[in-house]
Length: 616
Image 1: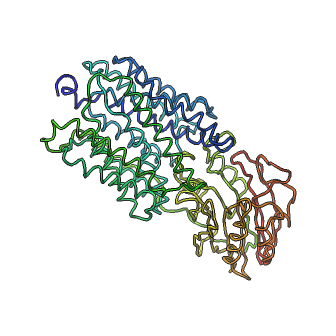
Image 2: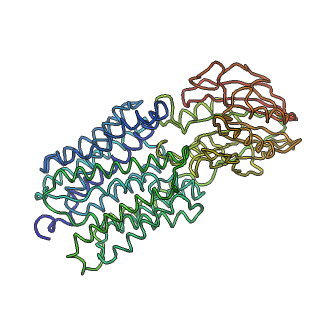
């Protein structure tokens, strides 16, 4: 190619702006998505779509950004200022989060479309740095947090944008460029939901935080390395197949096989973006903004459908959704190969050795600063009482729609429980900020945990215990028409003095006109050990007198709240009826309930229950 594109194909200024815009966009979406889901829970699809539609259509405005060097620098600078505003304003208003996310998407589209240099490498570096920050903060995005460290992160993204703007101002003009930015939506979908999501990788692979961080960052290193390659165009069909097939496998593969799959998928994404974005044309127009907006709307539609499937199963397999994102990215690669065949005779060679080296270093170093292994349990003497806390934690989303696991940890720690039973524990769900709540609470409370996936592999039930765990298992409950898959996790604990205690944590299904709750309650009874001290706790989605509770009481189990507490006390933060209580702690006849309390808290839409039980 001739002109500025050819001269500055290896330049850094544009790439730094892309790095900053990518990181700001990713963290802005992690803030916005839980708030959008909160609107959906409170008001249904209408309010959620009314907010999400304008935000994800905002990239259409990229065409209105002045095509001067200052225009690009200004919009990225405004996005950086918005990121800082989110950091300083807590709780974050929905309106602020929406505006910042919309501006961030416009900035990302503008930076990728108009920057000279290796923009695919800049995108990949932005993803890698974002993952590094997320893992250092234990998968709890610093945008939700207060304190100096979180503020430094917000300022660092602004500093990268400022340096890129200064370098861009001192470089020859290359503003009249255009690239097919519609591919950004599918790429963001794959990164946010799967590939750049260490909590998701930890949950699906069954590995700890340090190993998940290493696996995610290794995938990012593959992404940067392949995005920095100048690929032969005749390899495009192989790239397209790899991206599409790997994306389709992301929903169902579990265990250690997830780790190489992530690396392969990230490598494919890097190659596809390199093919798609490396050959810009001159003279962009309004159509570019429309295409970018359609790509982002595709992101929103696929992400919403993927999330909705756990509650209202779609009429097609779930794996088709990430496969569609991978297919769209593959189409971009095919189009890029068609438009840039003049480079087909050149061999693949690296264009960003510094970026590859930096990312590889991050991938090696970051896991070493994270906790390895689980906290130690406490061996007790002859103390016959056990404090048990049960709580539906709503994915750590509080009354303000804020992702705040610290509030959960503080409330739990104040009760000094021996055993903690939790429901609606999210491990990488974007609507809960991509947080690994199980690992985060385990580290914060110093309590080992055991996990049972339910709705999918990244959302389910957890039991944490200070008492030594003798044995455990995760058991799926009968689907019985659903719509959501449910499970229970059963632990056998060493309670000291030769005593053992079985604890079952669960979340039952409820559906009008169905006996699914009773069927699942029956499975809980059969899963307990007759004649052995047992606690069954969880959100049973049943009110006093419901059939599911009758199944438990007919088996001899006793409600702790009815035995030692106020039977009329609600367990909901915002009860819909007097005495609204769907959360329960049941004990077997061998146990005596000495005390029971419903604890006040705004950290979830349910209230925590605490029972003190005496072992025989």
